[in-house]
Length: 115
Image 1 (cartoon, rainbow, N blue to C red):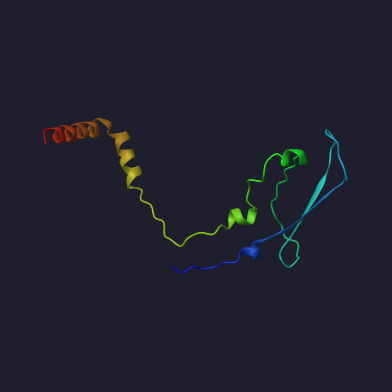
Image 2: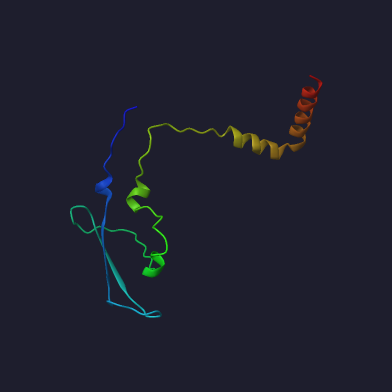
């Protein structure tokens, strides 16, 4: 099978985080400024989130999260996926006509038992 390599590096953002304090103690209020730039260094608008954690907690276990670029642009195999709504239609009909479907199911089971 042939593979098609797509380089997602143009989707990468350079994120700079600046705080108003160089150190902080528990309970302190710290203000952060976030700047995002594209690959060429031009400012871009982005939705960001910030999570803070104590370095001691990070030392307890290795990181188990992907980089955002790896999470949004994973390597995938070529393929086609399709779906059918016929299962949902059958379930909807079963809810509407429970007695009819139950009677038919019982008749089929009895027919199998006789064979």
